[in-house]
Length: 124
Image 1 (cartoon, helix red, strand yellow):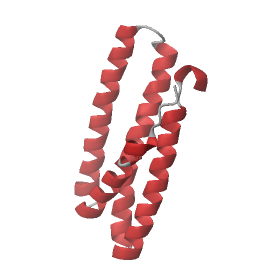
Image 2 (cartoon, helix red, strand yellow):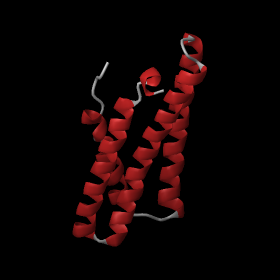
Image 3 (cartoon, helix red, strand yellow):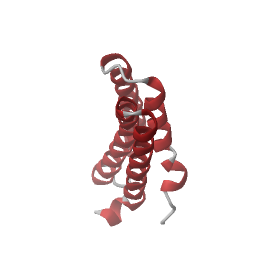
């Protein structure tokens, strides 16, 4: 299955995001305390949830669409739409429902997203 979908790069990205999240949460815990660390963890979890959703769509597309370009494109657009919706909903829950501090939440999200800069390596 891994050979078919080539999920190794996205698996590597998830590992990098988790490592970055742990580091930034520990720094935030030391610097700002428990509530900021929880908000930071939640923000980083948004980025990781996005990557996990993208991985799920990648595997699903490889199983269902195979080499059908039209179906792959539809699945790609659906993946993008679902990731945007997931991000907006999770931010809304974090800010409005959980009443988390905005700066640590955004810091966790942004720092975990930084893994995209050096998380995916071209392994083709």
